Image (cartoon, rainbow, N blue to C red):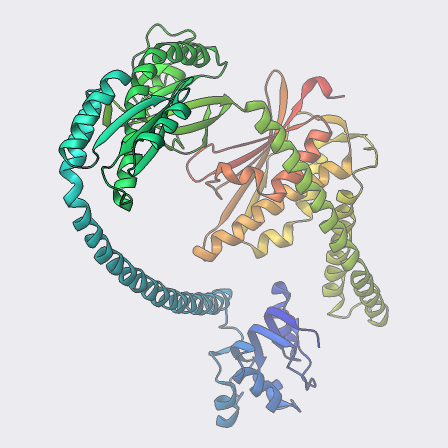
Length: 606
């Protein structure tokens, strides 16, 4: 069973009621209908006289109880209208009014109540989900705390065991820090280890002689021996720890000997590293300054501590903040995030900034970051063009699908209206309404045919000599009814001269159509917050020495810049204008105003 949803439905056979709400284009329900299961209505306007004629009132009451009909308005066309309390209790109408007293504001107020109820339901569901998530997180944290408590007890036991070795380790580290060569290492470590009864003898032997040394040990000594390795650049050494008895070393002693060897290796390597430090520093400076991208080292206050040559091009000093040094700004760049990759914009240029934290050993309390600035202006423009083309391609598929789906039922509507006109007398009171419906259906058919242009991107554009003022005026005339419904006041100022161009009439008319649809959509959104808001749209043609401008100004601002690449209407407008050599500009001439300007170069005119 298909589901029919509508914001406004009407059930009445009274012409007064039907005429009253014809402008809202409600869904007309048949009083003989017995199936309301596939219907969802926000507001149902029900004629009191129609209720008595319904043969399936029970089904309507059940649909009301199931909330498939959210609001019911009972209207009466005369003061003698009445209905039973059973009907009132079954339908529970939200409003009972005379047809003359019912206004658009009443309907808008009921619609606002529906939207508020839906929003409250969403908030309630969200609150429940958050509570469930809170309980889940609470249990997880409790489990983690228990695990950490258990680990803490185990850690305390290990700390107790380690405390007994701290003093020996302290002296060992101090002794090793005083060692500057292999010769002094054997002497000082032998004295230290024997004083704490860790070994009876300590010896350092080159790996070249270790094989012969071990053979002599096996022949002359019968004791426990532990051996470790020591590597210094291209030389290798072996450290021997001798014990007077045959008992094997304890696990902690073995671990201690390994750590001692590693620490000694680190200490002796330090001397070699210091000699190589200057050499590495030269290599670093060469790489740092040879980069074509600006590189800065800054602190948390954005103060520059180091800058490469690319960052200092055209600068007389290395001091100052990064935003002053690179861009001459007085404040931090918008979007700057220390320690993360981000993008900033300076005028018409874009930069991808790679920010990495830097820890300096000589200043452990300081926080520094390395910023690499990569100019990505051309790449961003290319990516935006690709994104726009992809969106327009999807828009073409969608618009053509919609047009084909609407074409068949619209043809049936036109045929039915023509048949009804043929059956009525020339002076029939409904003939004027049918003529209006016929004109509206024809405009709808023209709009649907224009939608198909998005699916014909591969066809060449047919350009004709056209008057911009006349084309714009013809499109505005098609929107008179929509402007009235959405409370939009339109003004089109006449021009003092004719502006003719060789352009595609269909593309241009569709462009103006999309511009007006853009303003109508913003007007509808605006009125959801301010019901009595009157939207103003001023259309005028201006010129300067180089160009003509078709300006659409409205009090429906402001307009965020980020939506310029997200709004499909704007993307379609820009694509249609670009294909013909025109341009689109969006600005805010005043607070809460927005202006869309189409630029026509005079050099391309007829």
